[in-house]
Image (cartoon, rainbow, N blue to C red; front, side):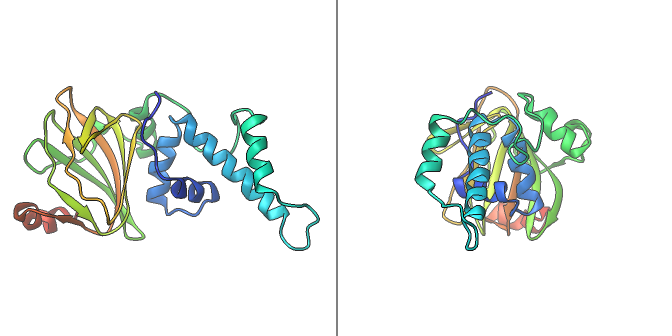
Length: 217
């Protein structure tokens, strides 16, 4: 598995530093488990952070960011045992990866039908961030919406279109207040996603807004 869409570098830097709340940490950890590119970025961020610490006042080591970047690109092999970059076992079975985290199979979870071929399962809330699993039938069109804060959506199975992009298993869609989108599940098969959102979704149409309080999204 080689994901085509990744979280922004700011997310990966915060992950490397351990600065994320648990919900966002969890979804990034699952993506990192199948994405060699992001593991490499995180390992580099950890190394860069270490050099910065050694360059603080009172330490004799000079800090040269350009030299570190050049050394990383030219001589450093792909990391094999960096703690944050390897926070979860590397695997191509991302469904199993998340089932391990949840300590439950996907089918055993308390799914809630919300009509139009879509089911939701709320996993919890922490620090204003809600964690969800979304499960949709082929061809399902989700309501058009924007966001009150950040949202990370990790595809576990299947694929969906959003505008001119397609997100497949292992990909992350990185959205925020400036993002207005309407995901459409491909007709190839069922799609399952793990999503973490800050604040409430902002739906454009009336019906989703009416049922929103019942769903808590």
